[in-house]
Image 1 (tube, helix red, strand yellow):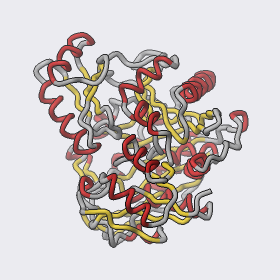
Image 2 (cartoon, rainbow, N blue to C red; image 1 turned 135 degrees about the horizontal axis):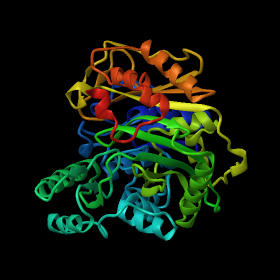
Image 3 (cartoon, rainbow, N blue to C red; image 1 turned 90 degrees about the horizontal axis):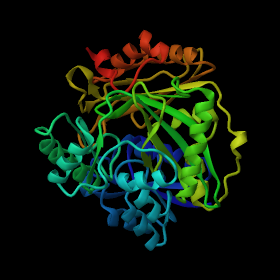
Length: 450
């Protein structure tokens, strides 16, 4: 096992990795920008290294600076977290070239699966059906127009190197497509250092369901069941739950087995997620993409399986075989995760940076258990440079009904002041009859914000 690792990320994910590392007696060192240098969350680390200025392009996206900081800190491995360079094969290769273990898949696999179009081709070869779209990465707006004419409008332009909804634009018509292309290209280049796009036929509504995977270097691939991620705004998730209310037990077993088989076939190692879309009114599940990294919503799967996914990532990266067998992994109750963001739902989810004058998120409120993952406390400033995520509230109970009740109680007792948050929207969703029935999809949010 590693003695010291370098976390090439910030905020909540950095703290989460530090806690998992320290539970395995691993020291954790973290990169920081000038904006984060004195942040309270850095107290979770043995030491921090400033790698540049506030803007991500001048700090957290500087691959060479991050590798140099890891080497100078005498770390033997690098954890990329999520976002930033987490799915950048060049960064993974750079780590290996300088004698650092990259806590994630091999660079070749990262390149093939982290880039969305090659992932679609690889998963088609592994037997997972995809969503109709372009035949590869688009050369420019004209090629996007040709692909859209072939598959039909509306279409969705997506960042090949992206995730989290960034670099994604909807075009309802041929007139809208050039502008959507330019906007998606610019956002993707700024967020991921790669402006390449591909195109898919837009599916209005539908269920967004993903499978959590763990794969070791010895050919074992396990699934930790699925997460339902259909409640989204701007293609970014707000609420996740496991298991999905849309799947039967037989569908759940079949989907998990197929996802694990596909991951094994492409030689994947580490923690990863395969995302699917069930089009509205259909029973089939279409492959969308593979995330070759830790997911923001991983605590949902941890709650229902009892497996610490970040610890398993570290063990796999240290060349340890997975100790579990698939037959030993069972669902325990139901879990719901609520992403609390500093955003105004009434203003199209506009990010709202500012200072947290009060920050009180209660833990256990019954009938279930509540976990809060956050990097913030009262007095901290929510920076305009980074993601607006304040905290994740994960509620786990014996049944879905009890998990919903637990989540309602937890959020009703929350007190956050200084910035607007998405909590009022979460409460409206949790209290709705549609959510209680499990009757929702990716197009449901406008009905709750009206």
